[in-house]
Amino acid sequence: MPRKDVARRLLVPVTAVLALVLPATSARALPADTATAGAAATAARPLDHTVWLCKPGMAGNACGQDADGRPGTPDGELVTRYPGGATRLLDDTRIAADGSRERVPFTVTGAPPVDCFYAYPTVDLLANPLLQTGSLPPARQDAHQAVTLTQAARFAGLCRLFVPVYRQVPLTGLLAGILTGTDTDLSTATMDIRDAWDDYWAHDNRDPRTGERRGVVVLGHSQGTATAAAMMAQRVDGDAEVRSRLVSAILLGGNVEVPEGRDSGGGFDPDSTFQHIPACHRGAGEPMPTGCVVSYSSYALPDGSLPVAMGRTARPGHRAVCVNPAALLRGEPADARVPLDLHMPTRRLVGGNALLPNGHLTVPLGGYRLPDLPTGFAHHPAAISGECVHATDSGGSADWLQIGGDLSAFPASAPTSLTGLHVADFNVALGDLVRLATVQAGAWLAEREG
Image (cartoon, rainbow, N blue to C red):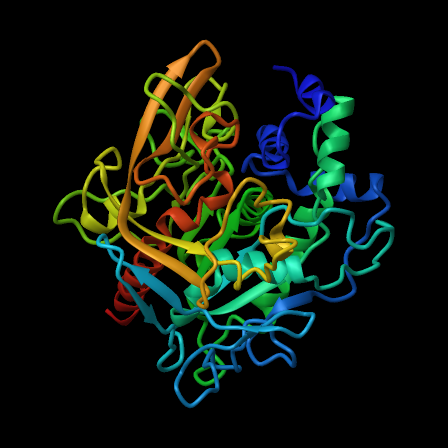
């Protein structure tokens, strides 16, 4: 169905509209001059300084970490704070197969050994700031914190969290692109993420105690994946020294593309997202790989169906990367069906209430009914499974993470919707992703010490 027709019918939920623009915001690298040209076209200029939502030690740090990444509480529980003032813990309610429940606190012991740099997905409903001109900075908003808590905050036990606020293409901009049939211009968003990375690399990547450069995990989702991947192509992929500090890149819900049968472009494939940073893979008994990319788009498709948007490429000889984090942890093939560690956010975590149950993420989480629990997450260990699936049709190649098992945490329409489980890409395997990054960080640190 053409994009314009979808938008004009106004029968597709907002999350589906977001999915329709994702092919234009896939994680193919933008050339360095593209960001400059696009910024000039939109009259946006580089920010005078990075606007940080989360930065260790910063006054008002939304992620609650001191300069070393510690939570600063006697019991080690991390107290996060919305820009509007509300505080939240990252504890979860563990729900067993028999229905029994147990509260499990989220605690941080010691200083995290590595850093995380996170680019969040599309959550701005309007341009931020409204006037996208010059160096007017974006404002920290509760929606930015809500999605950070939902996707990235539980990495805080592993890493110091750096989360820049950036001038992303808002929902209204995506809709305008659909209605006019024009490509989405991510140049300003990419410029802000790139400049935030430069700020982090120049001033914060060195360990505050040893002065040595730290390892870093790059996290991104949807529009955040597109901008983070473009930044990595410009700042990490071609620089061996910077690349040596990459512990892992977890780039979900936005295509990372590689040549058929290979893990990266190898230095001579312009259609590959990265030339030197490979997709992660590991055989049975092999050591855990580091400096590689974990990427997937999650669906719960009926047999014989293929994704409509994410996970697809029409470029001959190329495929979208699908790395199953749970299979990688086990040393099993990506197409092995294995249990996933599902953590769904609760109404409390995202600031939900009786009028707006999904709180600050009401629009992005349209169709989802979040659990009403006193903790931040509902943890369903082994309730669902996942396997990477590859298929082709007349539209090209498709690779995605197929979700099975108990789908009650997702909308009933998820198996047949255009977006699948897009907004829950992180959550379907959040426990696995955190464990995987932790194991990779341990392997990276051991390599440095060896």
